Image 1 (cartoon, rainbow, N blue to C red):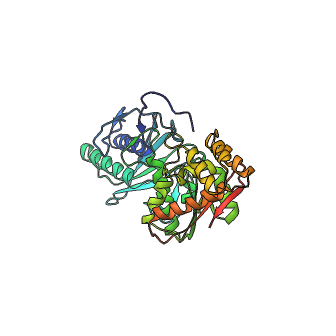
Image 2: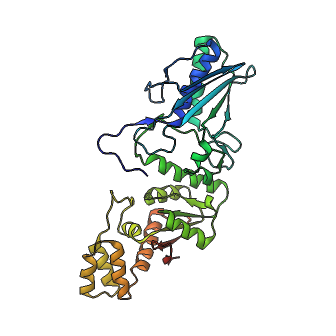
Length: 361
C-alpha cells in the first residue's frame, strides 16, 4: 500500500460510476450520433459529477465510450484504469442486459450479490446504468432495449491484486460501488470483502475458514490445514468486524491466525489491530508474564521492552510461554464476541518466518 497522503484527502469515483457515465455517453451517441463530453450522471445520493471521455467509437448498431477512473487519494488498483462501455441495440422488449467484456470478471460461485454465470457487475452499478439508459431513451427517442458490455483493458492482470479469485470471480475485475464515490482509505471496502468471503463460503458449504492478519500467518494456516485459498478471509486488522459478521452468519470452524504483536492487542481488548488505532500495553503484558511465573525483575524488563516481539523473547529466555497464554486469551475473546454462535474456534500465532509458535485449539 502506498504511503498515506497528508492533509485533506481527495475522494474519487467507483468503477460503477465510471461505467454508468460511459454507458450513458455511448447510448446517446448510438441514438444521436454525438457523444456528450463531458457526460453528467446522478449518483444514488444525488451528486451530479461530470466525466470527461477518454475514448469514443461508433459502428453499425453499437457505440462505445471510455472514462479514465480517478480514485482520488485512495490506493485503489483500478486508479487510472480505462473503463469502457459498449452499448448495442437489443431485441425489442429485452430491456437492459449486461455482458462482461475484456478485463471484467464473471461470477462462478454462489454467495455473491450476483448469481453464478453473470458478469461481475454489482447491483447498484446495474441499477445506475439502467436508469441512465432509460432516461437517455426518453430524451432521445430510444426504446431502452440494449446490451451493455463493460471492459477494462488490463483488468485481468489488475484483478490478480484483488480478492476476486478467492471469491470465485474469474477473468477480471468487478464493477463495484454503492454510492458512486470512493472515500480515500475507507475501511468499508475491506470489511465488505470480508463479508462477501463469508457469504461465498457459506453458499459453497465450506465448513472451515481461516481469518489471517497478514500474508505470513495466512501462508502458515494454509500450510497447516491444507485449506483452499477460497476458505481464507482477508481479515487484516479488522478482527472485530470479522467476528461480528460471523456471529450473525456462522460457519462450523474458524481459525484465526496472526503475528504475536497483533494478537496481543486483541487479547488486551482491541478489535481494530491497526497500529494507528491500537497499541500493545506492555505493562499489561508484564502482568500476564508474572501470573505465568516471571520474577519481578523480568516483569519490569518486559514492561520496559521496546516491542511486543522483544517482550516475547525476554519471556522465552525464562521459559515462560507468553505466546500460548495470548493464544488462549484470544480464543476466549473470540468466543465471547461470537456470543454463542455455533462456531468452533482455534487460534494460531506465528512468528515473522511463518512458524507456528502457539496454537490454542
